[in-house]
Image 1 (cartoon, one colour):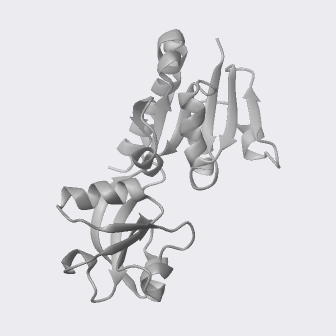
Image 2: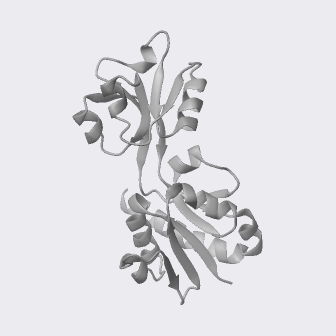
Image 3: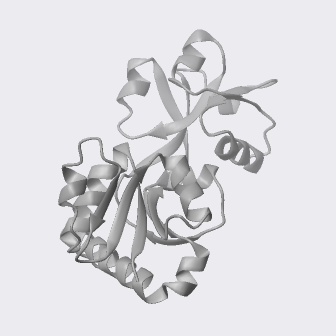
Length: 215
């Protein structure tokens, strides 16, 4: 019984492909894809397709994909009708609260405006601190918000912190640490349990191997 696997384009794509290859899956077409979006590993009977992060959840929830590899940031903001099965320990970064130097939004009194691409994550974070803030959704460069006076602070993903520093911002708190996760369609978990668990076990073996190598 074949498996369909949705892979997130961009930041996680290369790291996920390398992991799959290490686990014995045929990803040569994926690594040399050109403009193609769908790839087949006939030996393992697995079909891969590349999607945007938010769409990964959509394909999983609608049963088009059995398995998805997507960042925890997307899961924290998106739907919940799936099983989260495995932390791949790749694509590591963190959600942070940032602001201009010397202007900590967490210490501001009165009306606080927060710019972010992740309104649900931001809303839950500030609610947990008992803070009532105005969330302003920004689709582009979030760092511009505080610089131009649109907002007092931001909630965003940070990998190295270089962009933040170059725009005169600093980190005031970590909301959550995030990495790539394996998610599974609920029906597929029942109907293709053996195939799904084999796929996950193969990846889990590589995760453990990498962890042991880093000790």
